[in-house]
Each structure stands twice: as structure tokens, then as C-alpha cells.
Length: 388
Image (cartoon, rainbow, N blue to C red; front, side, top):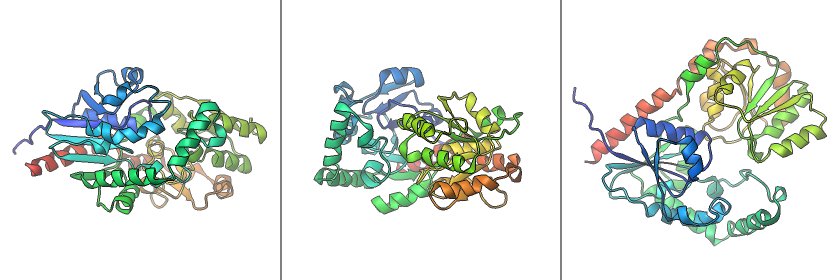
């Protein structure tokens, strides 16, 4: 059997300065192709040194702009030009991972884009603000107001046109879920292939065994306005069941104040930052994971919960519908009305014994990182081989 040619792939990513699911996804891509170089418009060098110590970062002129993290919303205007300015001499193809403008990278070589979603600040603005204007102070409040003003004018129309044209110039576009595939069709009028987001199913499954269930529910992830943490808190208070909230974010202080106002300190516990070692244990001990998120692109944490043998209670929307099963074998349950009363009804009757840990783990195994890496490598190699 003839061995497939090894191609030199240029990996391109959005501005790199914080850790989240997308950055974990990026690490799997780099490992898949054994890459030690990454292209981006700009990055936080300290963050890269800590999280990607073995990777050489090649940046654009934006790396030298002042206050680029403070003024990142304004500097978005330069991102298309920044990615266009990157050079890929000696590479056989470009593989970009983006939710914003990495897809603008251009060379005389095939370009495959893994789209986490069309940019939400352009196409899906409703309910996606990390912070509302009322939560900001001083210069941040002023800058947000100016930014919001321009985002409802011709500037936004221009950006949408640029974004759509860049997507349509790609050789191939890959969606991380069928939900994202539908958005790509809606906003770009393009047909996308689907390769699901990688999840460390094997590692979590091993690290989570040997722990008994405890009588509390768990929210795990970023604490932001659009993540539904307030809904989870109000539902648990209404159902009179304990909740642990793991994670940090821009909405954390507001949620802590809400718990005080509701006199629910004995029922809701904030865990703050949790380590990779603590995550499997929390997931394994929880009665169930609560995932009250609208329109999630994929949703890594529900898959991680299933990998830990734990059921998921989620709002029936977004990528979680593709990863959690509410029929035989059951690995979770959905609520259909986005209000705390709807979730509370489920919490009052929920019996974790109805959900078998082995079924949950088998469901999660379909999204294992090993499967992602095999599919992605084969996909890219086949496209580049066909382009010659």
C-alpha cells in the first residue's frame, strides 16, 4: 500500500491571548500535523510562553500596535489586512481555525478553514455580549458605546461583505458541528463538511473512575452573560437542590451578588478556577451537569461529562443536541423552554440512576480526540493530493 505524502501545513489561528475550548482545539491540530510554528495576527507573548511553550509564533504588523488587547474591538478592522499580510513560503497548504478573521489568510496554495462559527459579533449579535454597557465603567464604557455605534452602520455592512467574500474564496470549509454547518449555509451560502471538535475522552474517562455520585448539580465553564448561569442558579433555588459553579468570567461577580440577593449562599457554591486535574473529579461526583446555553457551537463540557459517566441536563439547542442522547441509550435530558421553571421541573424529578455510566462513556467516545486527528489528517491529505 502506497504511503501518503507528508505535506507541510501552515496552521493559522485568530489572535491568541486566552485559554478556552478553541485553544484546546488548536493544540490538537498542531499535534496532528506535528507543527512547531503557528501564524496569527497578534498574540500575548506571556500567554503563549505559558500555554504553547514549544511553538514558534509568527505574527503580523498588529503585534506592534499599542493597547491591542484593550482596544481589540476597534483593532478588528485591521485583522483582514493583517492575515492577508502573512506569507507562507515553502508550505503546501494553509489550515486555519477561526471564529473571526483567520480565514482571510491567503497564498498561492490551497486553504482549508475549520470554522467554529461565522463571527457572532457580525452575524449573531443578539445575546452574545460578554459584558453589557451597564456593567462597564470609565474608558471601557465610552469605548463600548463608540464601538456599538459603528457596529450598526455601514462599517458593519462592509465587514460582513469582507467576511463572506473571504469564506467563499476558501478551497474547503469545515464545520465543527451540524449547527455550524447550517450557519455557514445561511450566512455564506456554502456547503461545509463536518469534523467534530476533539475532546480528551480517554483521559477524562480514566481520571474519573472510582468516584461516587454526590447530591449536587454542576455548572462548569465560563461565567458569562450568554452561558445561562443565572438560569441555572434560579432553577436550583426554585427546585431547592444544591449547585456548584466551576469557572471564572466577566459575569462572576454579578452572579455572586445575585446569590446574596436571593439568600441562596447555602445552596449555591462558587468554585472559581478549576485545574485540568480537578475537572474529571468534579464531573464524576456531580449528580448531573447543567448546560443551560443557547446556540452553543459544539459544547465540549457535555461530552466531557458523559466521558466521566455523568448525565447532562441541557437546553435543547445548538451542538449539544448532536452530542447528548435523550433516547436509548440515554445520556442526558433536555428542557425545551428557556426559563428557570422549565429546568426546575426536571431537577425536581431527576434520578441519576436512570443513566448508566457505561452508556454515557460510549456516547462520548464518538467525539474522542483520536477520531478527530485521524479524520482531519486524512481529510487534509486527500484535498492537497487532489489539488496537485
